[in-house]
Length: 185
Image (cartoon, rainbow, N blue to C red; front, side, top):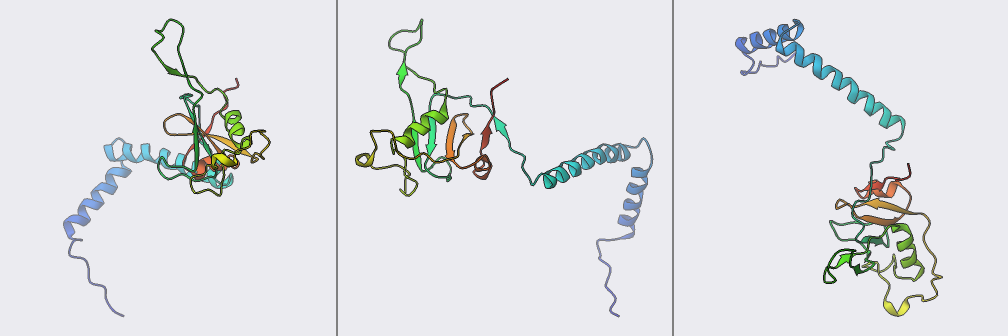
C-alpha cells in the first residue's frame, strides 16, 4: 500500500500543543474546561431545537405586531424583490390631531389591513396577471363585487407596516417576512 506522507505542518510541537489542550479541556477548573462545559449546554439546546424543527416540519413562524399603520401594501401575488412588489400601497389620507395646528398633516392610521386590501380586491384594483399587479383603471369594478382571493394573510414588513398577501400563513416566511402577531389578549 501507498504510504500517505505526513503533513509538514503536523510537527512534534503541534502534537504536544494539541495534547496539552485536550488535557486542559479534561481538567476541571481550567478556562478550556469551563468553555467546553458552557458550549456543551448550548450545543445540546441547539440540537433540541433542530429536532423540534424537524418534528414540526419547520413550522416555526416568526410573528411581529404591526407598528406602522400609516399605510399598507396590498399584494396581487406572493412576490417580493427588495422593496418592489406586485400590487399597490393603500393610504387612507391625512388629517390633523387634536391640539395640533391645522397645517400639521398626519396619516390616518389603518387599523384593519385585511379589510382595506379586501376592499381593493373587491373593486378589482389588483390583478395577479398584470406585471405590476395593478388593474388598469378602466377595468375597475365600482360595484365592489369582484372576487377576493381566499386566503389572504397579513404579514409584517421590515419597516413595521402591514402587507396583505394572497396565500396561507406560510406565505410570509416564504417571502422572508413575519406573520402579523395576534393582538387579542
